[in-house]
Image: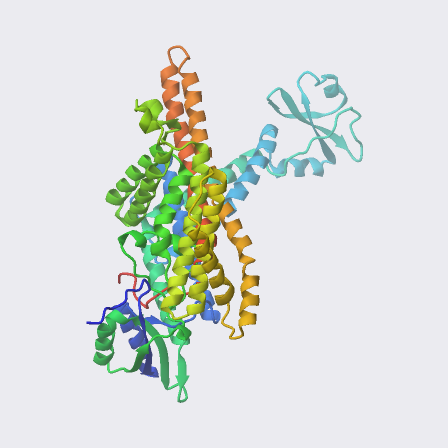
Length: 605
């Protein structure tokens, strides 16, 4: 029996559907129902209609995100959230109206408060009061002065009207006839156009309206699920539209041809659907040049790391998926960068809690737990636990503590671990080329594996002062021959040799890649030092009388949480670089695949 070769990218079947133009809408809706067929379609706005719909979807996303923040803030501040929902049909329109109203009122209220504060000291007046004065030929001049500087003699010289005495100041006006001006050494004050009582009433009305808009937005937070549903319905309709527009119209647009892909292992399901709907179709095995979508197929462990690989790009069809190969390295690199067994244990517990208690993020919880396991395994090499050495916390025999690595040993371990990954990546590339019958590339890859391993051994022997068998040098020479004569497909042996010699320049790149792994040691050491600093500060706080133990406990908890979060950030980011640059490059990864995105409804799996 022929053994089936396993692949980590699902095989795809290419379909061509021929549909009568009047049946296109029903056909696409039926495809949505089975939810397994990826119809080739546009991924961006192609006309004014689709542009409008893309914009509307973006507005739905913004509304859902903003309402979620409003609800979270309200719960945080212990505000009461209305139990009902706004009595409106257009939820998105009502949301945009309330947001616009709230923003406009925010600026208006700010301006009114300023005007009200300026008008309040002048008390109450009306326009009629000043109209009567002007009619009598009087012109008012307005002043504000502290009560100590106010002089009674002014009242004997000029007709004065005192508006108000407010916060130690006197606000008054001097009435003058014609073009005369008061001869007092005071600067005129700005007099408000609108009295404080009217401004206060307008301010109160605006604040009540703003409060109503805020209450409406709070009530809309009860409609988040409805908004999500409306967005998904809009997206499904847009998906259908783009699929239809991505088709080919033939015979005066009476016949529509669709190109689609589906996993080969469900061919029977797709064929059964097509035949039951009397659709004319053609099917064939998808080829690389067809640019079929990518659906990964990994084991339970590697599947958890697929979102990490997606941060870079998917492999192209026919290429090797590297997820299963980089997953264990990433877990252990994360552990080296975190550098503390105690923090690893915290991550394991956190991941398990998320896995069992938050079902929507169960896979992320498992990933966190596995990364935590890596952060227990790797820091065990030097015995760091919450910034301290394990033998400082637990008595151990000397022969056990002697096994723990010191800083220099951890440095060289990080370098050797990185070299191992580079050799492993070159091996993956060589074996893959061998399977693809690209023998020149495969033999050159094996040559590089031998060369890197020999260079590492030779340098280690010089540094550590040991010797290795002489026959290893002959193997290294064989590796060099493989590099020199199989780095090119040229038939001319001199051209092969020339290109082989120039390919040796790649050794500088390998050396640079090796140096990149020093970051594993640097981050792990810095995390341990920060934990040690937290412990030292906590011990000093313990010496404070009475409250020392409490302060020490707070410092230990808060300090180590801060160090854990900071270390996790570095431990997540830097292994990404080592994976996507050093590992992917040495494994010959090209990428550029597009994700498998079947035409389906939201409730389809």
